[in-house]
Length: 150
Image (tube, rainbow, N blue to C red):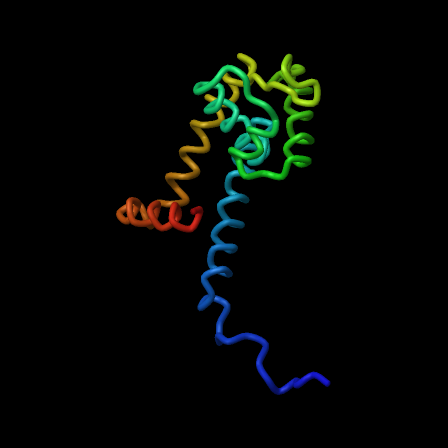
């Protein structure tokens, strides 16, 4: 039998919970980004995977879907579906890996690089606006985020 008198939560307001605050901030940031990127026909996930591919392509010639998913911390199946959409938009190319018939190598196209460059200008503006109230604490804020990632 359940005790309906006992409170569900150990805090009196959701704002006392770090996870709730992080979720709220993340949802607001993602909404801002998706609105801005929509003008380019991109979602935040598409932009993020293209950006990840761009960075990986700078470091190495061949990038597989699995390497990109690992780099972006995204689900392999979701990554594959997003990459199919980006390929249809001719923003990236997926070609068979000559060393592994199951793997696909990814390359961002020049059209993809141009779009990424244009979209980044807006993404940067959205970030500047979104984080303006913590910009004076940016080194500390970024350090805390990096500690959470690890």
